[in-house]
Length: 109
Image (cartoon, rainbow, N blue to C red):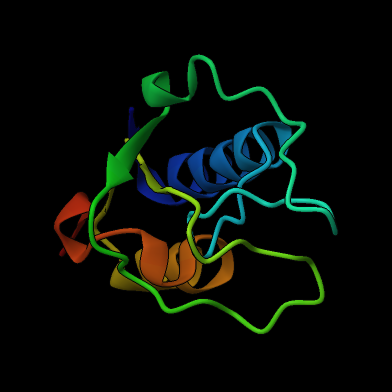
């Protein structure tokens, strides 16, 4: 998925935020969110359409109140964000993706 300009970057970021929530992913870490018993109820059958599973974590486990299993697979969005203004990319990266989006997927300048 490819999103350009300030509006496109924001819309794309919000889109992946919503999709992450629907698939039970913590957007900043890319890990599946489990309940207190370690079970996952979100649909993950076609998750590879929007996300790519990564071998090595790009972001350490957060100290969120939601249980995030350390052994769960991690996923990063299949997205490219592009804008001439680097500030919109920086905001999207910090607000939505945290360390879960590679800088190689962000084009600015």
